Image 1 (cartoon, helix red, strand yellow):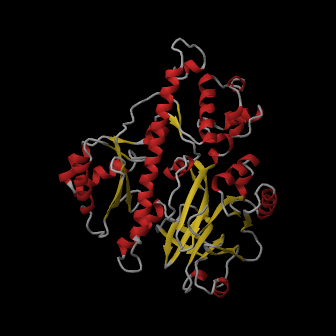
Image 2: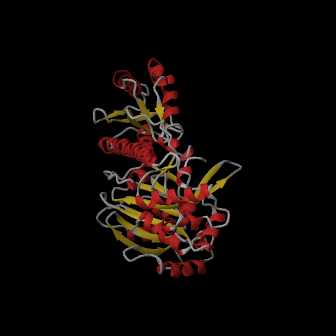
Image 3: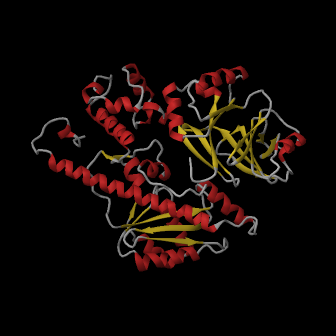
Amino acid sequence: MSGYDSYAVVILEASRVNRLGSHEIEDLIDYFEPDGVVLIRGDAPAFTVEQVRYELEHLIPDGVELHAIDETDSRTITTDAGTVLIAPYELSTQQVESYLPEDGSHTYVLTEAVNVEMDMIALTASVEGLDPYRGHDSPLTVFSGQLASDYWVEHDGVDLRGLGVVEQGNVKIPCFSLGSDGVVTVNSLAEGKLGIRALSGMGETYAARFRQAGYETVEDIYEAEMVDLLRVKGVGDHRAEQFTKQSTALIEGEVVRFTDDESLPQDVVHIDIETDGLNPSIIWQIGVYDPRADETHAFVQKDPTEKGEILREFGAWLRNSLSGRAVVAYNGWKFDFPHLTEFFVQHAPEYSQTWESTYKVDPYDWVVREGHAAFPSRGNSIEDVAEALGYEREHTGLDGATTAHAYQRWMQNPCDETELDWDRHTTYCREDVLALHHVYQALLDSGRVLAEQNTDRPTDENTQQGTLFDY
């Protein structure tokens, strides 16, 4: 991971590693390309950590550091992003101070000695083990293996975050990018997307059957003949063709079509919104890329008390510049579109009809939910898909969660200390809409390739290839 001073670290729970095969571990490292792997105990007994660490040493490639939060002494890792302190047990304030760098650079603490206890009767939370990390001059962030990786709360000036897997549906393995400025981003990959299970529809039952037949990796399925895939128990023409096309997308790094749907409009405008959270009280940035003019626009609301100004500016732009074109947003039907509709009605009703009458397109919905194509990535985030399609992003060290968190702090206490680096945040949003354009263009190009293939095919062909879209 390059372009921004950071240290990328994958977190593995010892209690879960045994569920993954060697090919899946290697797949995980290939996907994240981390600088380090840290093994946390999770629910496993202490002796299991050392055993799992020994097994991982044979799977982790050279150049990737392997560490464990175990019962050994605390130790530090010096990185381009600052100091990483591995503290397996509770330290005193003086011990913590002794580990902090003299140059005042950021320190990231990885521990399992901090926990949050909930009182379900009083509906209060108490933090245990955090006191030694309070009151230091050097900035630090504390990560605890006792908390899930989506936990992020500031306790009396100390950022406390979780390291553990998130168990919502598929178990997600986190990779943290620790920035030199204290900014942390997290990317997660579901366990069910490792190895051959990266193929949609390849549940554990089918995966076990394919492994028994000698198919361990996506590459194995990509290189197989269709007739050989059909020999696997329960695999018919449709599923074999689906697995073949998905493996082609992943290996060749291109969008592969499943259908000849032509509903995607050519002349569009791409947008992305930034808010203060998943249930927003404000839309504070709207990024736009206009391919026809090859121009980007950033509508930014710096005053958190004024919620309508940004909508009026964006609404006026839509009315004057859209010219009947469609608006494209990635995962727009689940986020951007409904929130814009709600906020236009509440804060800029004079432009509500303009927005309502705008034709809207969601490429995520078209590919993932409607199943018209396969992306060449294991994850479906816009960053994952665009990178897999060759888009080189300008790295800002930000993600959606960090931008929302930064604006929350600004809303709560607008001052020099909390003010956002506006240029950095507008760059992040601009990169999202440019990445979206790159992905959308790949979808349009895949349709033209499919049309050429269909044109070249004899009309009376009655082979498997000729019945590709019959299902």
